[in-house]
Image (tube, rainbow, N blue to C red; front, side):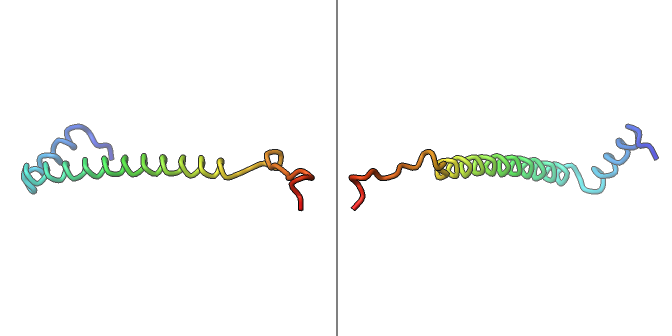
Length: 75
């Protein structure tokens, strides 16, 4: 079955009649806030992952960077 613009228009009219303009408006507002919160969460998650990766890179030390004590430092 193929949905034409006429079918979508009929569905939109039926939804408006059943729920009213105010209810549909509130629903769309909630939907928009949900999308905004989701995007914010994804952004914060990416920032947190980048911070964790930077902290891990700072903690990781390669053997060539390790300083060994000299003979005079040994007891």
